[in-house]
Structure formats: C-alpha cells, structure tokens
Amino acid sequence: MTISYGAQSPNGIPNTNNSVKSISRAGAYEPFELQVSRGQIAGHTAFLLYAYSNAIGNTAFGPIWEGLTQSGGLYNFPSSAAQLTIVSTSASDTSALSVQITGLDANFNPLSEIIALNGTTPVTSVNSYYRVNNCQVTNGSNVGTITFKQSTNLLAQINAGVCATEMGIYTVPAGQTLYIFRNTKTANIGFTSSAYMNYQVQYNYNPSGQVLVANQQTFVQQITIDYTAMPRRVPEKTDIQFCIKSSTGGPLIASLNTEGVLISNGV
Image (tube, rainbow, N blue to C red; front, top):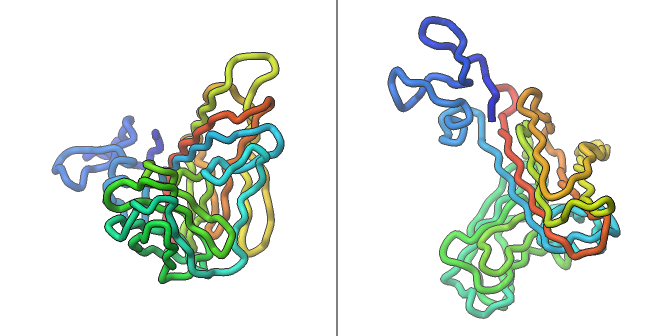
C-alpha cells in the first residue's frame, strides 16, 4: 500500500516514503499502513479479506465463497436478524473446539461471540445476526465442515481443516466507511483464446436497496487492481459480493485477496 496521509518530517518537509511519525519509536518514521495494522491510528482498522472457491462454473456470476456451486448464483442476505445454528459434519469437533462469529445486528452494528461446538449436534448462537462477515476457529483445528445457518439459509461455512471462512462477501458496519486499496484475483485457468475468468463486484446499498454492478474485468491466471492513488470508497451498511464466473466449463479454482482500511465516520 502506498497511500500518504500528509505526513511530514521534523523539518516540515513532506516525507517521500509515505510514512508518519512512529508512536512506538522516538524519532523514527513508520509506514501509515503499518501503524493502522498495529492499531495505533484512532478510528482506523485494517481490512483484509481472503476468499477461495473450487467450484467456479460458467453458468452465472456468484461470489467467491464456500457455498458457491458450479451453477453460480448470488449470496442470500437475510431479511431480518435471527440466531444462527452451528454444526459440524464430524463428531470429533466437540465442546473442546470453539468458533468466533463476527457479524452485524439489525442496525448494522458490530456483533461477535465465541461458542463451543457439539460435534454433529447443532448449537445455537446467543446473538441474533443480520449479517455474518467472518467466522473462525479460536482453538485447535476443525476435523469436519462447520456450517452457520439462519434456518435453512447458509450464511457461512468453515471447510474441514481450514479453521476460518474464506468468503468474498462483506457488509460495512454502521458508522464506518471502507476504502479499498488493492484487489488481487487468481485462477487456475490457462492462456487460450477462449478460456478466461469474468469478474465483477456487486454493491447493495442499504437501506435504499440500490444495486450497483461495477469493476467488471476479464483475466487469466492473475490480475491485481491497485486503487491506492484513489481508493475505492464503500459507504456504511453496504453489502459487497466479489463475484466470478468462467468462460468455459469447470469446476475451476479461484481466490481473492482484498486490502483496505475501515475508517470511522467523522474521523
């Protein structure tokens, strides 16, 4: 990342290395992005999203995540907040294993909890979630596939042995704005005249309901889009789906890495 936020050296001359004065090292300067990652810049939170799917098809666009099938299709965001049912496909994932759910309540405010598993017996979350942004195992490694559902609607999934969700789906919390710096897509598709990946991002703006499809691209193997000169701004309460489909049959594999920063509104 190469964003500069107007940092200056002690003599008042702007730095050329996009650094600001170090909080932890007197007289030293550190990259602004490093200080955000270290939690040293008030109102700023590092944003890192990684997504993976081995079920990319050529039928319809769908977000890169564990619930994607070759037929594609968009993610089904809940219409109301409700408790989640969490269960593993393996009896070995007992109460000794816990998962953390990170999401949003009905007002798009951040919500999180840690809950112990009970193998193949479902357990229920304490909180009611309107959006689920991330889930991860907090201790050990999961033997089975862990699903997080609102009734029958799959909202998140941790594949066996992976220990965290890998979903190209995110909702910006209330009171914050997301600025995307960089976006990299990778796929196991070769250089031929007829084989390539199609990529797009779908933004659902809440509460207006407006839908914007943007950033449409085609690529083979890998492409990186750098927004550091003018970061992509995503306002609060926006649902984001990083979508993909292939030009040929599948299933194919694709991954996504997105970097940015969440900034509290008013900072």
